[in-house]
Length: 223
Image (cartoon, rainbow, N blue to C red):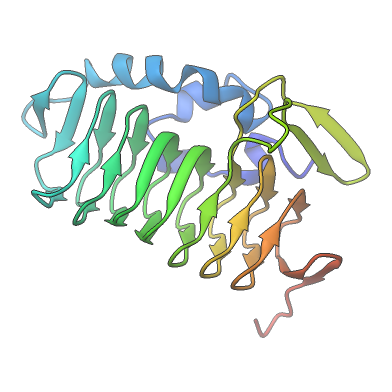
């Protein structure tokens, strides 16, 4: 099934690996991110991580600009950049070699290693896989306008999440174009891409390109 955790993520690239192994679907893991970070934080090597505030751990080789706000619980991994005016509201597990850019907001998320959310992004109640990238201004919408529970639509079936807040699940190496909106419950398979200014809903299979609603094509071998 294209939207299970093993189909989407290489778990070697996140401190959340053991935690995620306990679930079938990634959105099932959203409820426990806060507790996960709190438990992981207590195990981190103090020679590698600073503990500047309650429930906040930041790798000593990370770069955090003075204007950034980091609320706990939060872990910032090695060599990660948290740039000007970033707003980390809490329950954010950010991996190694990531970029959390200017005016980007994170809330209740897991970012695998090498994820880039570099310019004016909102990422909430979401899990972003290894090397995934969100273009400038692209966001995850995590609540339906009717405030009903989020349902995953894809592959001829519907999966009830039982949650009011579900953002997007991005597999490894996903590319999201600038100024795109990923609607609640969007799942993007490994190596999927989204054209700029898209409004995406449902499941985009691995290796496919979302060009527009009803126009999803398999990526050619030449890219």
